[in-house]
Length: 375
Image (tube, rainbow, N blue to C red; front, side):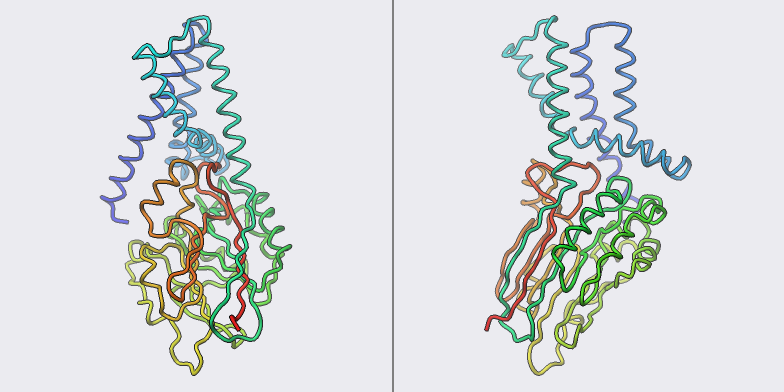
């Protein structure tokens, strides 16, 4: 990412984040009567609001655990910020037009009710985020291959400060029960702030999995954001096979293509290989071919090119409402299964989450594809 693009992103993000937080904090303070506790509460709220910024900006200058602690506080705040902001704005409008009038005696009671409601909302969203469901798709392929293939897709785990070893072990245990032939990780496996995932060895439990054809991974944008060489070094240490713009033939029966993330050129300066150079062409009978990549801007580019299953992630399905509606406008397939021509596409909502440990209107998921020949 170019420096000016990064600078613009930071300015916009901080403006929206701090502006939204100011509206929420202002609403809370208007419900608190002037007292000796008022300044203490304001200080705590400002600290909570700034903890994410402090934790990330000072990550290289403070102990790793302190950076993680501050970042976690900030991400919990961010989980509810959208809803607290919308509520505060609606509440202010209703007051301005005298539709709602709150007496002084009821203000503290209202604040208690609001606090209980938003804590409850967070707990629901947290549960949905850390407990992935299993989605299964039985797909018939119009090609000949010897035996049915059970493929598991994991995506967008973002192992790091927020997605912990215990959370990942829960995923590993569920994949064990599925007992797949092949495991594909379609990017953003690591968040890995300051090498946190590697230093804590968060993903070590993946060694409990031993699928027949192995575990394969293609990088996502966050592997590049968080130092691609360090990310790949840790992933390689877990005996995960890395595919970056490369194709492999498995069991002399089917092909697996790992397409590198489209953000790679911005971070490395290298160009991506054209898709046509990755798709196998030297065969007498068309082989079963699976492609995994992290993000796809235009699914038509992958349609009817001999690819039978194309899987990706990145969108998180917006992670929580109303952002799931926003990503639906931005991507031609924002989530789920679709078949275009002879190609089966799946965009995962992610097995984990990014940043806020929170989902609402979406679910974390482990996806299972049972592939079998049509005849």
